[in-house]
Amino acid sequence: MLKKLERNAPCWCGSGKKYKQCHADFDEKILRFQMRGAEVPSRKLIKSKRDIEGIKKSAVINMACLDEVGKRIHAGMNTLEIDEIINEVTYGMGGIPADLNYQGFPKSVCTSINEEVCHGIPARDKVLKDGDIINVDCSTILDGYFSDSSRMFMIGEVSEEKQRLVRVTKECVEEGLKKVIPWTLMGEMSDAVHQHALKNGYSVVREIGGHGCGNAFHEDPWVSYVAEKDTGMLMVPGMVFTIEPMVNMGGDEIYEDKKNGWTIYTRDGKPSAQWEIEVLVTETGHEVLCW
Ligand code: MF3
Ligand code: CO
Image (cartoon, rainbow, N blue to C red; front, side, top):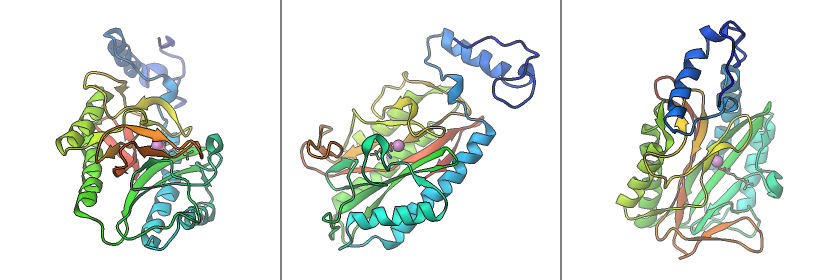
């Protein structure tokens, strides 16, 4: 339940304006949805203008990392060299790689090849070969603000069926993005992602999802890409979260690497792809902050 504020008191958002001239109507609207049973965001999930500027600056570094990887990635390169690019660009631009030491993660970026679904650990002996597809998932901290995005890269001559997986997974993100509309439920977005994957004969990983992001690496809500339409948190202007479905060519079952405690693989050994963007819900729709 939201705390009632005096209408003449300063607004909770820190704008310095009176509550009645700032977020009072906004709170009323949220309350109406909540009374009808919707899950609604807490105030701390609503980003201020200043937060959004901070996230955008962090995202400049994150996107520069992925751009640089795109320029330099090639067959014969190992994934530790990708980690080195991330460190070089991130520290060079004054940021900190958010992955490094996150819950004990040992490197600065996740590199997941073919049947690796996510959280692949860069290593000298992981060498990219012709025909591989790889997800590079990068996250940056700058002045306490977090950005998070990932892209797929194709190495040399990639089979038609893997190319299609990579393309359709990107389309899934685009379909989801179209449904990021303020004052609607997040399940609308999730279902759009899921249906596009299913229509193309693929499955979507259920256990791992996206997240709120910006003032911390992983904030509420947890974001599913297999959820039903009329479920999930109400999307309100100022929320920032990721769209990052993991789409499998085969079944949706996955397992975790018992040895490194991180890497997730498809159970059936078939390839998996993922693209990730970080999105702001706006008054009229959305703005992609990081890709
Ligand atoms: N970047 C991932 C995400 O999209 C999280 C990676 S956590 C790590 O949420 F520890 F594996 F790096
Ligand atoms: Co993420």
